[in-house]
Length: 285
Length: 334
Image 1 (tube, each protein chain N blue to C red):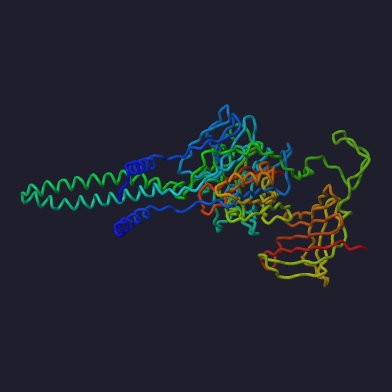
Image 2 (image 1 turned 45 degrees about the vertical axis):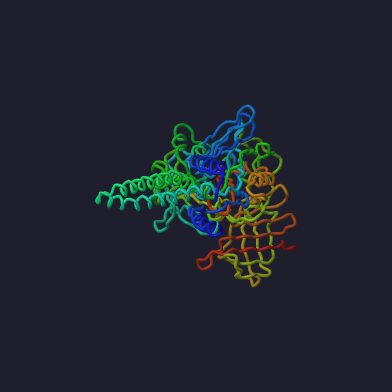
């Protein structure tokens, strides 16, 4: 009888092991991060010249959308426009030798929330049919591969481009901000930190050079950003993730009102859709 | 080993169940009329008059969070989906069993096929009949194995099976939490939005276009903060200390009411930078000042009410490398 049982145990073990799974999902914490511009600017005044909307995806991808608020043709000098990453590295918006994620070749597999560019268009004072064009584009979190938008929306990857009066366009490159979004929170332990522009551990900025006098002189709009809050609450009972999320929202009741924020389930496995981001940031001059 | 009739029936039922089920039903409790959406704002449903909404979540999709949206409100409030560990042994067993049965069946089928061919050639009817039954039996077993194993194997590829979790049947939203709006430091309007008046030459004649002249002038922040600040500093790169400075001086010179020129001077009298830097002065309501460098917005100086200063310059270029210079000091009392 014993041999009989052993005889059947062997093929049974093989049968069970032949169909295996990856492993047990464990969510260790819920993490929250928010970003602000160093100077919060509310409504865009009527006499502003330029407005810029910033979309940040859950993967930390940054896209800048420029709106020409004047009646003149605006020239954007992409060689003198920069993204300064949180590690201090500065990259020009036009540099043929720099490899970045460009608007014509976006590969994004974050599965996070898409940011509706129509919403950004609305905030930049864009209305009418143009916002309809923007609303069809998913940014930073969509599962897009290959060409994601038409050239009429994104600036071409050229040294200088012209922007018609009262029109808009997206800067030619998408940059990944170090330490922002899901990949900046994937291994966080319990923490509750708020920062000022001076004390923040993650700061980055964008500088856009533009001219409204036909290229005779260029001005710049510099927008510095900083992480103002980083919170991670542990999941105390296995699978009770909402308890940890509620703790985050209790620690920071204004969390959902920040201009841009993201939340992430800190898991032992890196699954698609671990989190998502919402909101966008604006600046004007 | 002998199993009871009930045990065999349970095993067969489990196999059938795990073969067909591809989504998990959850019931979300929220306010009546609230909408539940994915983080991508894809609507999933609206809660009924009692505040219940039943969702079917595809087992191939992992959603740690969903959004809840109260009617007539603009906020989308996230809530997390709670889950439990589910080992998925049924699907594993079904998949393995199916593969095993299919293998045995195919083996038996091909094993009986050769004798059947030989029997047909030799005209051995008894062997032919027996072999035919063997081929048919093997084929049936193989087919049954595929029918059981294939769906189970496909199920095991789904996300909730791969990572052994199952959403709890009842979920709650976070609409009850008292949420607030953040306070922002609103930036001042740029000068171009206000018609310019010469600040150094007050005028008694004022056009109606620019309003009524007040019996006061704006505070001179440049005058309030100008002077010498002495302290200690560090020069770092990648969080590594490169140099430290004792008795390093920061000289603040008033340019206008809200602009200052700053230079840094080491204890031996050498100027740290090749030229002064211009800073815009911002006064806070609590009596502190923030100075922001005009060309490098991340270079800042904070001055508190006790005339203590924190100087931070994150982009000090020395031989092409970027260093961070940080100085803490206090105003020198004359």
